[in-house]
Image (cartoon, rainbow, N blue to C red; front, side, top):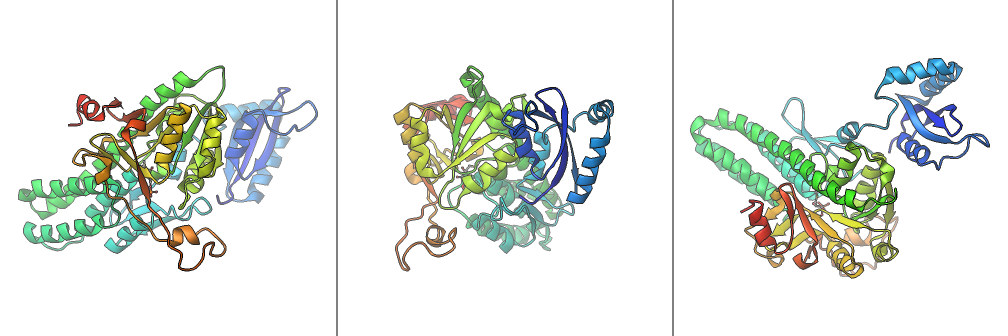
Length: 454
Ligand code: MRU
């Protein structure tokens, strides 16, 4: 993460206050608030970060640090009181804003995405204006995660069809259809892409009588509705998942959670799906130290290492990163109480496609008796697909495995590589599927019907 400059006040074990400077406020909060901060003097250890201010340069922050150090205790207290709401960790809301995956630009002529291929080292937002740019951003995983892909496709349809000059609906719709097919060819597994494109299609067709100008307006409204619904959906998933976490919280110990890939804020419009229970916990007053999340690094594209651990760490949640092949050892050690993963497509029988490696985790979880939950917005449940066997699995380029993350190539030239982006977890291994409408269990077909999904 790029350096930022903060001055902060921390309360110490002896009741005194300490003023300091840092470039990593979230780390300071975590270290201090967990009581693990280094002692400033023999009897004085920071135990709580109670105030902070951010400055653009180290020089400005340092000069403010000096100023605050000169203040009396009473003056400092006044400062902290007046801040009311500063002096706290970055709010969950500020955090969501910082890592928002996709939005429309203010002029509504383009998409503004955070380029996820550059994270966590560089936080850069990019503008996508053409259909090729949007297609490439989805294909290359600049924007990724099933719900975020759906929102991107919906915004893409609205922005690009706004540029069509046709005034008759039939000729407008011909171009609209071609655009839809083009965007649909970007990635095959996440059903949200097709679900969102179909919703946009239905909006255009069902309003054809209203004329092209009105249809264009309604397409923007539909894309916005898809984004807003995603926020509400993951909020509900978060509530249900948090209910499960509360039951696991015992003896003041953090709840051990494992997750795979990134089904977080970056993959959705706000709360993520697998991360929604964690962010809901923060919103409802849990400290970041009340949970301990173990993120699989997620070979080969490292969504766990680059994205999930970045997100959770930035949000102040205790986070540990491990390689995928360490999951079994962790589960065996008793550190994992529950597993939450996302999904890209769920078949009618509950088989769930998600990032490659997920099904292995589910098998391990069954072995170690750890509850394994799939967080599934209804937009990801594809009742037209009977079982996991019919879910198309995206195959990706060999160099993602052989060289992408290495200084030099790490496999012989010409070696054959097996690189599926997803696998399918058998429904029998899934303890429960958390949808926005309720918790579903096996038999899933029946359970989906009960909550009104079909
Ligand atoms: O290839 P990716 O990074 O798009 O894969 C993402 C996942 O597998 C996620 O777990 C899934 O899309 C759910 S996101 C809420």
